[in-house]
Length: 61
Image 1 (tube, rainbow, N blue to C red):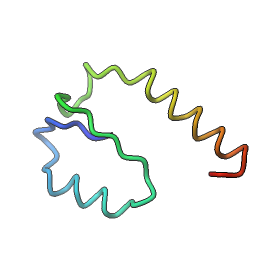
Image 2 (spheres, one colour; image 1 turned 60 degrees about the vertical axis):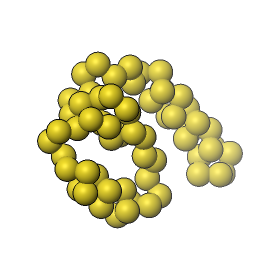
Image 3 (cartoon, rainbow, N blue to C red; image 1 turned 180 degrees about the horizontal axis):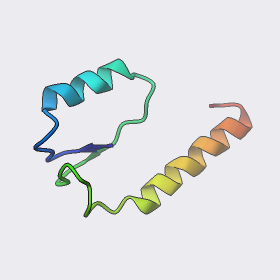
């Protein structure tokens, strides 16, 4: 989860983290700041978890 308007974590640090974890899911939330307090994340995260669990159960994970 990456806040697109994060003013604390430098863009270079975010890029290096993405490169270091190539198999990780990566979402960028445009307009969100460091704390993600205003981001509506519940539904997308639940959908992501359900998809990951379905893939695991079906042997595609």
